[in-house]
Length: 405
Image (cartoon, rainbow, N blue to C red; front, top):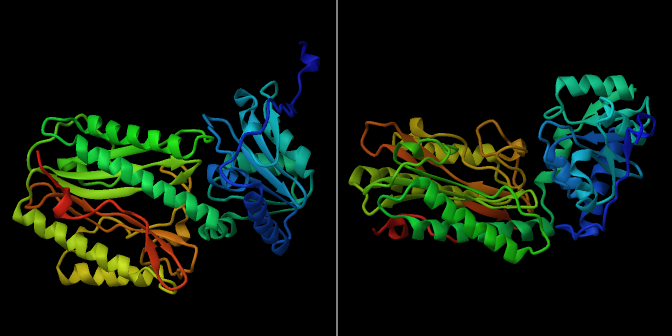
């Protein structure tokens, strides 16, 4: 092949398209919602660059590894833009068309995008994801008449789950429970955190493959923490060996086609002292109060205020680690978050049927004090017409989670 025959981009539709996680009707409805946003904001084309929005509207979850990806949506087209290193996999795993850009010439990515959008149009983009470097290239290559930030409007669409999404999330919660039970069985004095974590991860990956034989499998993980390592919710796994009386934090995170679910529990190895039991019980009380408050019409800030009041009454509010919950959907620890549906003081979003949120209060007592460690419980609730359904089944509290050894 000579340089003259090398192309900037091409349609490398290699093989047949795979069975996607959702139906064509489901993806069509999502695109209809996006196109309604485009009409309302006079947008000609949306250039989405985030993993979560590309996956939400097309089903394709990319692996960036330093390369840019996109999903371009116009009034009539929806096209994913992927790098040549991925060959035909993006085509096989997306709803709609796909264009592969090559690396023969720098910025073929933007040339491929322009082949769909044209120049001089009103372009929607995601301000929470597009870097300044890529925003400058958007302006240079597409020469837009105007740009419109669609970060907030697309997030608001994703916050309202379809019945198909809720069904998938329920499967995810059940898989998280499977991982939780496997972890509990692996807890032994002298066992390393990493060994316990692997038992939970392996159990979940096998369960996902059983439930979804047509899926791709990636990104499922466990954070299993012990002792001092429980102080932060996102502390990585270590090789620390478990000791009698240790506080433990069980955190399972199955990932199914980009959809995140979670189970988080406080446990103790063999025994729990009185001081730790008092803090644990206070956090359980906050957890149960929070669950009772999740219902249609409740606001994120209102729920937060009531749990804050409980902790303040017990002189524990200063030990609160973060907000009390968040939404579920296409999100992960390295991409995506629906910031408008977090249980925090500064979020006034009202819950409506179809939203899915967690209740996860956490108290962290500093090292060197009685009851030192991090205490956290986490359940997932689906907001219905009059109340909310708790879809987490793994038990919380000392009756099940003081693990005999």
